[in-house]
Length: 305
Image (cartoon, rainbow, N blue to C red; front, side, top):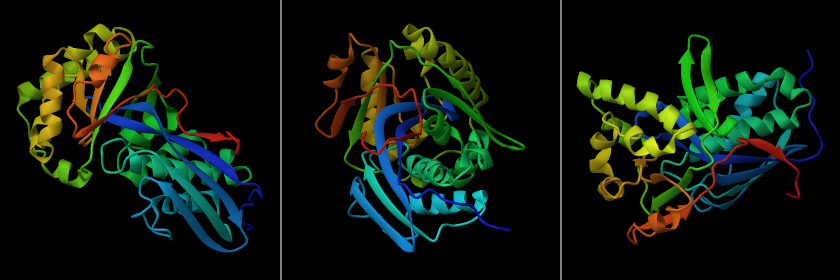
């Protein structure tokens, strides 16, 4: 049986940063943010070439170990076969090891690019299959769902794979991120979580997670209450004391603030009137950035955009 055919032209894929959990929505909620990695991929006659600019340019491998390449290989296997060669150029803007979904972005960029350079790829690997593969590679669906689909996502794993629903966050919500210079590995942060939690804390989180769906989509005035968490942030505080202190300080000022993903970035969900003031509330150990909400998710763009 013949393998797939590939396009001669290069393709460009853009993927957004993401923030998972959003406080109480542990391993379920994701929000796509307007900070992007881009990759350009071309099928070549032979070999593998990987070029990296920006985040990770001095530390990431430039061979088959690169996460974008590994993800492309997994997607090509699902699509029926590998190309003879690949040229991959990565322009990375999402900080690594900061809880902004850099690994999910690499995975999603790789599988979307592999589908895009394969003739008939969208039919052979549809959007549901794309999400299932991304979740399989990442190990959980929260970040990859938001990265692929954009907006605000609720993701879960069913017997037949990852699933998600996509909701439109309110236009009044303005994300502000506070990014520290130091990294925290996801494995380290997850290792601090207890095996069990008090029933009262679980009950509070269930109620806050339900409220957060309403607050983030229609009633942002409820975000301070809706982002309260008792399942993971306090347990992880010892790995990121400055971030934990900043979350507490922001919330004391009435700002809905959470640890982004596994941290140590802090995400504040503010509004237009408060954004500039909120930017000034962090100390010099954090780089503060106002971002937009990403509405598109992972997408294939013209090369000249």
